[in-house]
View (cartoon, rainbow, N blue to C red):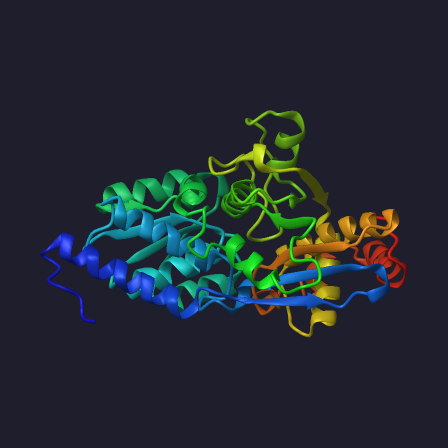
Length: 360
């Protein structure tokens, strides 16, 4: 369907929503993979593979929701420049949806963002505006939107409210539908990381809305503010910022809803990368660093269930494609430059996968 006259804003918005919804109809659901664990443990692990979205990551869902939220609120019109502050993957997905609607998109990102992410944004038709100080990305993005009569998508504010957490094929509803014929269809734990906090908010609310006994565990990498804030109750905590792309933040973002979280597990960066590499080998597909963080947390919880003799399941996410990190997390030289030693964490993984015991 061709767009209506762009001089008819209301008609254009109707066309734009139909176009975004058609994309969702083609690509909203993703695969749920079992992870190989000994059957004798009586615990199953599943990973929902968000890397198969058209833009290659979990952030495809978020970008779709943010754009729909802006359209339905009357904030995005036929000539609106879309702008967001991003560390990479969200911007790739937002650029995709901007191009789908014939709009321009600018991503404001830290200059340290890996070149592969910038290339993906440009491939989708977006522009990259790099800043040296990562703490300024919010203000710079808002300023660009103001100067160019655009709209600041503001993922860190709107992530928790843009998604319909009651259903409408959100990630939680999709996951439980796929688990429905498994031996333990209601998992004991769902494990996710937090970047905006939108995914944990959606899943946490859905669990309560559906009155499910599943608990929500959020894993947090080094130098992120979320874990310290959750344990102290202080929302003003500041940190230096995570090296695990897509999760962990230097500040507590507005979309973070700590009251939905049953448990948090801090994960060293070297542990995330060790688990990422081990997970890739066992799954037969290359996954990213945030998936490694998820796996480290999931393994911790599974070992506790095994030690207690409890059966059940645990579910988590494959957040993005690991090939985006060929020159970082999968590069031994890159790790050495940053003094990231995987050996102690590999030993923990060896022990866990062989015996079910956790020594991390």
